Length: 433
Ligand code: AMP
Ligand code: ZN
Image (cartoon, rainbow, N blue to C red):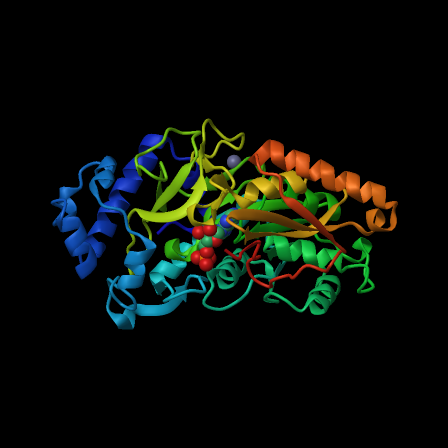
């Protein structure tokens, strides 16, 4: 295993060497996968009975996709490829319906994942001098524990605050001079909207950076966080099926997330035809984990929509970058026959200076038609202003949304802090149909 503090070389491998490394690791994963009944059948169905049947990295495209349903069907132990006594931890996805999808980790798996999280924190410029306040939920969810271990291994001073308890977050942040926070973007915006009412001001804190992830968010939301706090916010992407955070992370340039290709094989496919799309075209991200021996998962359909950013990053790292996640294939709303992603709505409303930090989208039936309602908080100054300004703002939002999504929604304004806030991932859409 590469040492976590010296993997600069791996981050800059030329593409040929990177693919050669992927092939070696992929063969090992195929060997592991063949230890499970599930993959013995799946791989066998396309003639792969031994790792020697893989000779080129493109052989991966012969293998059928693995889906969330496959993970549910094999619950609890169907994908376990090591003896149970080798397992030191399990995690699960944060889905609320049905059986969770579980993955297992051996100590080696954890070490490799932790090394990736160290790398991810380092590329954003974190150092051991930083004080890291982790506001992600600790538990089965990988967001909290995942980055915790990386931050510790890097030598940062870690405050395992977990999510929620706004008052305590502020106290810790002030008293221990937190420099880096890790949170969902929605929680971070909520937290700082409470700053003044809790008796704090920006001057009380020395925060410099935020790692934000676990939920889709627009560039406008990032900008709001950065402008309000005068910090840098880095996008962090991951999912429990692929370990958790540190599948892809933004570097100091913040121009898309480097997907760590020594540890994952990425493909982007057309969301209906499931055939590869060219770089720069949006599709569903499909991932293969190359570093986890306990729970091999090959060609996993993440349902996350993104694109590969063509060209090199100014940082010179060779691992390709993905664009921020547009949404999930299962997030797409069909409203009177029109496809709408919540992120398209967020992008429009969050550009407007009078709009507050929180919003939600409600869809309901009105007769035979679908009705779209956008509930959004507005800043207190505009509420106390002339009501004509509020009407004008409402018309303006409606026009801008019509131009973007071709639907003219009903707009409802709310005072700051009046829309519900989640401690974990934000719930932005309420579909009452
Ligand atoms: P979980 O496995 O419960 O941690 O959920 C993983 C899912 O969260 C991913 O498949 C994405 O849909 C979403 N997610 C994680 N990180 C991000 C991010 N940076 N931007 C957008 N969505 C994200
Ligand atoms: Zn870069």
